[in-house]
Amino acid sequence: MKNKRFNLLLIAVVTIVSIWSLIPTWQDYTFTKQLNSFGTSRDSLSYAMNHRDDIENARKKSLKLGLDLKGGMHLVMEVDQVDLFEQKAWNKDAKFFSIMDTVRADAAASDARVIDLLASEFKKANIPLSRYFYDIRNTDQEIVGKLQKESEDALNRAKEIIRNRIDQYGVAEPVITTQGSRKIIIELPGVSDENRVRNLLKGTAKLEFRLLREQEVLLRTLDRINTYLAQNGTAMQAQPAKADSSAVQAPAAGTASPATPAAPVANVAGQSAKPLYDLVGINQYGIPVTSSQSKDFVSALFHRADIQALLPPDTELVISAKPDDYGNKTQKFYTIYLVRKTPELTGGVITEAKATFGAQGAQPEVLMSMNSEGTSKWARITGANIGKRVAIVLDGVVYSAPVVQSKIPNGNSVINGIESIEEAKDLEIVLKAGALPAPVRITEERTVGPSLGADYIRAGMLSLLWSFVAVSGFMLVYYKKAGIAANIALVLNILIVLSVLAGFNASLSLPGIAGIVLTIGMAVDANVLIYERVREELAEGKSIAGAVTQGYDRAFSSILDSHVTTLVAAFLLYSYGIGPIQGFAVTLMIGTSASLFTAIVVTREIFNALLSKSLLSDKSFG
Image 1 (cartoon, rainbow, N blue to C red):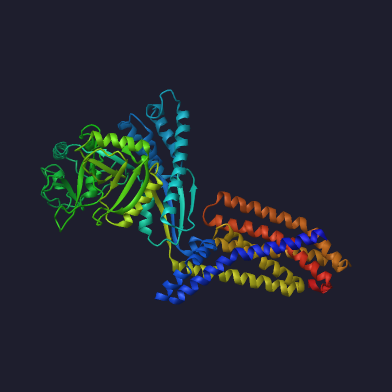
Image 2 (cartoon, helix red, strand yellow):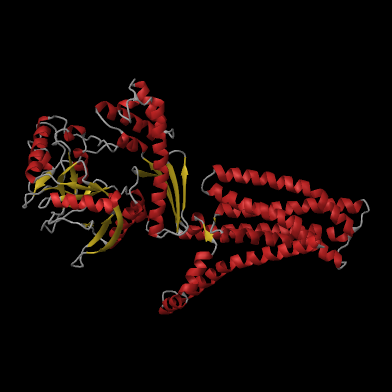
């Protein structure tokens, strides 16, 4: 009697909690339908404002739809571990870069661990890793272990930084997982501005404050490069930058004067006496600039090892992030800077960033605050360099290069030269989230449109409906009254699956719907085992009460075995699968557990209730 009361209480609690968990989903559906009925009229805005809290609360707690049903972006991003290992090296020379170029090419052609490729190449070259990494007392095995730990930390840090950026951007229910040793899988349902999200995720956010070299030093350096290019017969042919393994395409021929750089030109010895100044000009203010057409080629040129060898020690040529018209309304130019390679301060000291408009209210900018360590360093740097310019460099390009007017003791700084408030907000996000430990690149991208998602929802719901109708119809025809009990349990089974997904903020995807369809079959299969056992007992002359008891007792072990093995298989799918496979596995695990409960507990209590009222007979099982 006590056991019966417990079972009834358990069924009641599970049913009530399941319905309660799905109420926000129904409310969200109702609110959305009401808003759509208003269209874009003023009534829609009024309704949304009056019910804002209720709408937000329902949307937050409702059953979420996966990427394939709602639409959005699927991205596979790869952490550039070759770049990471280059950052960790010291005493780098031409041989080191040659080995790393080979490792980069091998990594691009395979999914092997980068650390294994690195160790293999150094072994082939018969060079100990300690020549470039850590301490010379470390063995190759110890260094490989340390670098592997660095790569694992970099992958996990990149994942968390990307998650922080996405959370601040405002994407609901993103799915972010790692795959292998260097890939991150990202699913962003409901995203509409793909290009903005793409730029937000790729930005390394490596912020540096670097001192500018004097203008005369910059001009002499450019002259030295121009002379070298004029004397070198192959200097202006397309060459890859060290940081990018893809070839740089040489630009088409054209003409330009030093004062007004126009389209880039390709030069070989004898074609031009001023090959650099065909790409770079000196404007009326004495500032070296390059045109938008020449920018990419000039940037790649400045990254070449032979060009970098011509620069003064501890310096680097960089280009502005945004163009400036310098009074020319027909064309804009990118400014060229000569900055110290060693930064005075890095973005690791930034504690707060805020997008706003400048003092005049015209141009967007980002205000930054520093921690105590950064504040003291910034005060020392600005105090020692009054009258000099400090470049604010983000991801290798200069956003601004203000003149230090006085010592700044409060740790504040500003990034300007930003085109729109949206770009300023994106900069705020990446600075708040922190810099990626190594560059990341998108290796795969898929976009699912909302209309395609709606078609998937319709197809998925139809498959779920028809499978339920077919199975429940079979149970009614074949098992008569007992089939009704199985169908009641089946409805509760589906209710439990959906409520658990909603309660734990999991997403329902197309593979998830497939998991529910499979669950319907499994739930009925458990009932079929029980009913056939009951039939066998009735055929042996047992009473209806005794047959039901024996049927459940003897079928229990078979049902338990099948459900446990299915749970184990689903768990393995979830553990080793990704994306759609995990969505299928989650619903299968929930559905299998619910099926065990409804088949063993729910239907049995239904039969007990029918037996107590003498409503069950031999013919009730077909």
